[in-house]
Length: 294
Image (cartoon, rainbow, N blue to C red):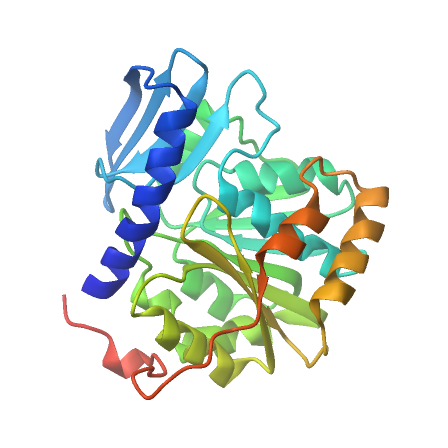
């Protein structure tokens, strides 16, 4: 767990520097703060209209929105997460584990009017903040389920075309959402041709073990490195797809014509695509039985 906390802190430092620079050192004011059973949830805003969600006053920015342009994605990793959408033709159902401010589900909801988006968030105060300050709202195609993401998946009978794993504490990935047992459950809830997208960090000693764990469950992995942060999006295919970067780019071109994102998905893929790193003997498959004691 300590390693996973450090992983988030390293990535967060890059992101925080970028966000501070982009906001020209504007003063921040707290517009919402509430203690939950999991963390202190805060929303801060500056005079340029940038609003951020943070937990326990940690450096990591969980979500961000420009209240003057609320439909735009602000964080680099969220933009790169959208490169996954072209890989499933005509998706019907998408699951996102971890709500944050809800910028990703809102973007998908607006972009793909035929898709139902289920969100799972363990912290009801996060849902409150997303609803009050980040323009998130439920409707027939957008639902939020308050509860543990792992339990939701294990209990669910639904299948999804895309499953996004994006659940974090103040500065760590919960171990229970990183193990091979959990990933096997995730894989079992993919529809035919479905994929999983996980937001991880590359510049951390734990990363090889994360990759090895995914490789132990999924037959094919690809990586998109996010600009302006230490984040990587790990694409895990439910079945062997023999995908390469050129094919991914072509799918993105077709997708952009049908659903213009204004993100230039082709550029994000061409600049960020990587093959998964080869793991050495230090990498271990993460298992439930090895969860660190709190």
